[in-house]
Amino acid sequence: MGAIWMMVALIVLMGLDIGNLFWQKRELQKIADMAALAGVQGTSAGCTTVQSYAQSNAQLNGLRSSGLNADTFLPADCGNWNPKLPPITEPGINCNPACYFDKTRNPVNAVRVTVSRTVPYFFVFNWGSDGRLVKATATAAGTSSRAALNVRSTLVTVDSSKSTLLNAVFGGLLGGSLNLGAVGWQGLVNTNLNLLSYLDKLAVNLGVAAGDYNTLLDTNASAGALLQAAIDVLQRDGGTAAVDAITALIALQTAVPSSAPLVKLKDILQIQSGTPAAGLDLDLQAFQLAQGLVQLANKQNSVAATVSLVNIPSIGSVNVQVKVTEPAQISAIGDPALAAADTPAFDGPNKIYVRTAQIRSLISISLPGLSGISGLLGAVTSLLTPVTSLLNNILSLNLIEALCLVNCTQTQVVLVPDNPVRLDINLDVAASNARVTGYDCSSAAAKSLTVSSETAATELRIGQMTDTQKAAVFSSAAKPVVTPIPLLDVQTKECTLFLCGGWNPYSRTGLRADTAIASSTSSHVYSMPPEINQPPSYYSFSATDIVNSLASTLSGLELQTYKYNAAATNGFGSLVGLATQLVNAAASAVKVVIQKLLSPILDPLTNFLMDTLGISLANADIGARLSCQQGAELVY
Figure 1 (cartoon, rainbow, N blue to C red):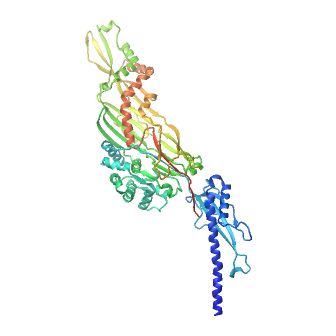
Figure 2: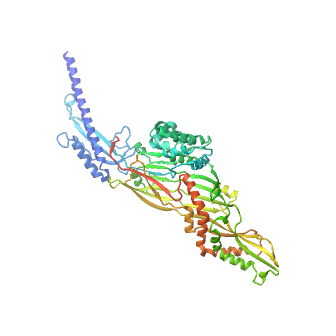
């Protein structure tokens, strides 16, 4: 019995020593954890401040800084924690799981604290031993600042006329047909979708590991599958308010042909590598997401959407073809500190960047007769007065001969008799873009986000095209060729004695444009931008109507005269062409021509068409959000 009780006593005493080791280890770990969390709060002020914060906190939480068994508190390490990069191996640091803390990498967003203590044995293990060294290590990372940019859809309300256009444009871009009412489109405009929920559901549908958003964004998927994930989320979380949006998404999904090419979500969503799930907890407009997916699908095939509009008041019939060559990047999320640490700053792999769509379009219009355009005759006649004077001098005889006793030629200049007049407009819109170029999270009162935007350079060609030239707009990388829009006809008639024949066309003067409207760069500071999980604050960068800007610049405009009969022998066409080059002094008359003929037609039409596609010409509406660093979390 004595032996048994001695054994029990030994086991109990061993348990006390071992239990004390584990208890001391736990207490030491608490000190290290709290010190690391405190140290992160000073990362913005430098590593010296980090070490001071960590040491002070450790002493307040039980660090033994003096005495026989004083704790060893190593200076806190400052560094960068990024689990999306390869793990770091350091001598003496045993990480299981792997460590992602790098003391040499910027920006500094994490602190590692190591505390050690010699724990004495009280009973069994105390023979000849000073105790056991217990060490605790903790790594804490700051909750990173997160900035988000998005391109706003210009569509606000949808009526029956807009829904018809939307059906034609979106259905054409998908390569199918679409018949969706205004209520369905308005449902998309009014419904928001949580991005984090959407990505998580898409990962499940595509079989991608949960939380691996980089792989998810780079995974090939059909446009139908990407739309299905949005449908699933709204059916689960949207409630009755999302019924119309769900109906619209199902209609869009049905319109996607089975032969449609696969796409990658990263082409319309940019999520910075390493962005935590909390940084994705923001809303996207369902219409913007659907619009981006449709444009993305169109980029991957050769389909050009065709929209025919008949008998538009004051315009006539219009045929529009649109091809998206680069889809909009509707949203970008990331840490502005990482973007600032890139080389070059804010323009490296961690940039926070969005863009509007890049499109190529062809608009063909049948106009009523030019004589019905008020003031056009006077403007053009004034413009070509030097030409008409030359015509009379060249083709008419002197006063005595003008009695036509033998033969004479009479001339007149008239507006073209063509009715309707055919007009082709090729509009190539490059993508406007915006990126974060600065931020301030030094204090709540100073919170700001700086965004630089480059508005699109647009190539505009106005004239007439043959069917072959029209086909080349979408099938060739070469610039399309346009011939002038007819404005004036020179007519002649031959007289013998007092008898004159009818007026015959001799030459034609027309107006064409082949010009680039240069891009412009501007910057805006969003003061006190909303948090990531709140609606963004919008700013509109440099809005300009394309054709009205032509009226003020006259860049690329040409008056061109050409003969009906290329075999004419009297050189008249060459003389008229020479005279036409002399009318630069009449630039004000050219402005009137543009304003009266082109601007009232093209500005409303092109602006409305681009708005339907979510594009404002030479204009970018950029929404911004910013959440500054608000705390810290233990990561190891």
